[in-house]
Amino acid sequence: MEIKSIIADAPLFRNVSDAVISAAAQACAERTFQKGGEIDCAEERLCLIVSGSVLVSGAGKGGALVLNKLCAGECFGVASLFGSRCGITAVTACEKSTLLLFSQKTVEELMQADFTFARNYICFLTDRVGFLNRKIAAFTAGSAEKKLARYLLSLPAENGERRLPVSMVRLAAQLDLGRASLYRAFAFLEESGQLTREGKTVRLTSADEFKKIYGGTMK
Image (cartoon, rainbow, N blue to C red):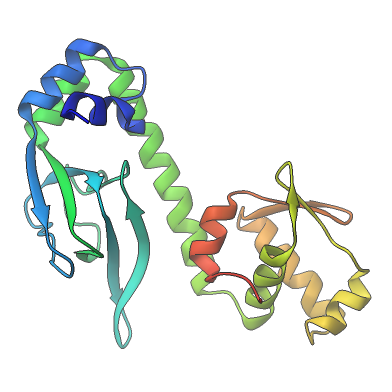
């Protein structure tokens, strides 16, 4: 797939004019990193993953704390492009990965040339802020919230909804929680924007992010 098609398929460039996509393709630099290679974030660059995947890590007690895993078609460096590194300590290739790199000057020119690109950029940043807020909520969650989150992930989903198969009393017993702890866990996940609940029907804000945050199901 040629570079123009790769760029056009990325969410940041959705509905952007062909002229701007062509300009982006001419201005970007292509680099390949081997598995385990650290991608230098010291220089301000917007990075679009062409192939492979990377881990984004931040500082944490006892070592690096994995914040996210990004795959082909996703971007990083969006928040830090116009300032500091925003606390990110490392971006590491999980496998052989090819990236397209865009300088701050290039991104500024693209924003000036097409408002749609600027709007996409702002929307992307808004989504990332939401994701990080939910990640912070997960890091501060107690064991009850984590047990509940993993249980919910184990339930079958239909049209984005999960149906609790048992009463709250039975569920509390299954999770080895007190009823009050179970209700607080639901309240925590709702207030942090990670799910909505109506009776026995639960809808996760983003099942994929839920999996990344809580590390899979109880199975």
